[in-house]
Amino acid sequence: MKALKFLLFILTASVISAFCFAQNKVSLIVAEYDDNASVNHLQHIINYTFVDGAMVSREEIISIPTQKAGIKGNYVRFDIGKNKVYRNRYVVTGIGNIIDLKSKKVILEEKDELVGFRGDSILFYTNDIFKGKYYSVFDLRTEKYQKVENPNFNPLPRPSVEVDETAKPFVINAYATSGKKETLVLDAGYGEAQPLIGDNVKRKFPIFWLDNISFLYANFPKNQQSASIYKVGIDKTIEKIADITEIPATAESSSFEYDAAGNIIYSCGKGRFIIDLKKKKADAVIFETVGHNFFVESTENTKYGRAIKYESVETGKKWCRFDNAQTTPGYAAFQTEMVIGSDRYPQGVAVWNTTTKKWTELEVSSLANIIGWVAE
Image 1 (cartoon, helix red, strand yellow):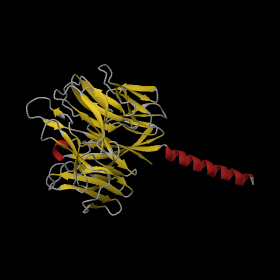
Image 2 (cartoon, helix red, strand yellow; image 1 turned 180 degrees about the vertical axis):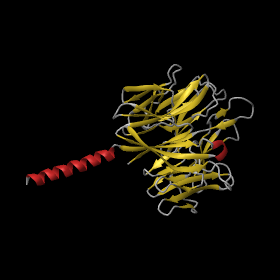
Image 3 (cartoon, helix red, strand yellow; image 1 turned 135 degrees about the horizontal axis):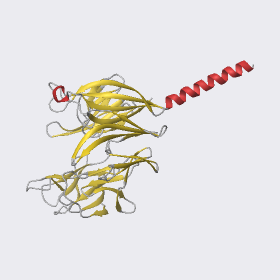
Image 4 (cartoon, one colour; image 1 turned 135 degrees about the vertical axis):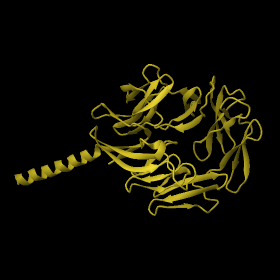
């Protein structure tokens, strides 16, 4: 009887041990350029596996060219926009390609705007002067990509909103699926001039949907030195949320996004701001939330780069980016750089973990992007 109990104890301990081991095993997926990328245009998807905080293996999953014969422009790119990992298996690039990490192949070569995920379906939107406007669906089970022929199909139950730039100030119009046009904003400002020089500049006008009935936009005056953030409803309600003043000239476009904690972030030439809809204010971001209780100093310090924190404890200071930082429970990965004057040179990837509470430096000679983490 004692022997049986002891055997059951050993088996239970083994199961628990195996479970815990599996829980502590994660993989960081990184896109790296080939050493001869200028000639062969190759990029490699690399899997760095970590167990209990230690990097234990490096595996090349697949090599993919950025250009391909017969395909105009980009083929597959990991350095444009933000990549997403779905179901611990599928990588959707910032331009809409899909790579299956398990089968190690490109399963979608098309380049469209990602709308979202619905079970086995990945939804895309095309808005092209030649192709037209329509939705498409990629079925992960069949690996088929099909245009939705129903013109009234709309996975996002809201009208199409467009900016009329034929006159100044601009006008914001909404178009129902029936084609009916309604003017939501008569005076939407002058957009954002990029670059801020010359007479015939290109205007930028980001519209950020909060839900299916309201969105945010930034109203710029002629002088481009300030911006007012407005909330607009499809019922034509307009509410000013905040003013941002003394915006310096910049070559970068302003934008809205959600951070890892779900805060609305507005980026402009003055910096990054948290938009508080309830309190109607815009507060400068001091530390960026990059997910799973990791934080990175928003404004780069000329002496040390950026401070990095886990919860409230500083883990170190590094010259790094926060916009492509990738986190998972217990791990954070950052693209590090060497800064010499105004020049910046990618150095690799730095990984910090909560188990050893130490940094692991991955020597990546030519980093394309940090794609994300996969739990195993």
